[in-house]
Amino acid sequence: MRKYKYIVLSNKKPTIHGHRGCHGYFPENSVEGFLYALNFNIEAVEMDIVITADNQIIVTHDLYVNPDLCLNHDGSRIEHHNKMYFYQMEYKEIEQLKTGLISQPRFPFQRNIASYIPLLSEVVDLIENEVKNKQLKVVSYNIEIKCDNQLSGIAQPDYKTYASLVLQSILNLGIGQKVIIQSFDKAMLREIRNINTTVPVSLLIEDEISPFEHINELGFKPEIIGIDFRKIKLEDIIKLHKESIKVFVFTVNEIEDIRRMIDYRVNTIITDYPDRVEACFRAY
Image (cartoon, rainbow, N blue to C red):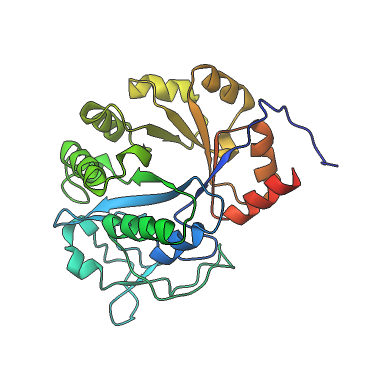
């Protein structure tokens, strides 16, 4: 018997998105983590992207080389005071960085393995081949565009160029029908929508402001609202669903929180631990 009761909005359970691959068990945004996530009943892999100096799209969460995640090519530590933006580096230099070897206290089950920052094209090709060769469930791609409007020209190209590079890459990779583009940056989502009206977009929110105020500021109705699960309100879920807007919640890792989100019948749970969500489904 459950210790609590929540209002159940429908009989349909949420889908699962593997956050940064399978962040709870492998280094974030690593090839190894994305492939491991395919072992679970996920609908999509969630990942972050950034642009390099030579207009390559890399899969990484930060706009700069994070010294808490990356080591130099020789394994030495990177100085915290020396902020290096990826947009000022070519990929041939970036791929020499070592990731996955610095322990992450927030993720005690994460494996320390030697990894690197991959290209989006490489990640997609490896996932598609893995799915095909092992006859796995086809997955989609929930791609978060990382940007900062105060760093245009320093940490990123201008919005139009950035959006065009991403959309063209998605087209070239042949995954246009199974991509969601998400961002906290409303200007980026507006630019994406100006160029392409068919790719679903998700507006990310992590504050106490009403989702509908954010939507009004965005200027159009997105297909999805992605909300920090700690900020979600049941009444907002009901209203958003009435507007045919899907509700994704991030990043839900603890069993009690997962159960609550299942009961709330959000559309998707983004998690570092897909296995925990699966276990909750089985016990539901």
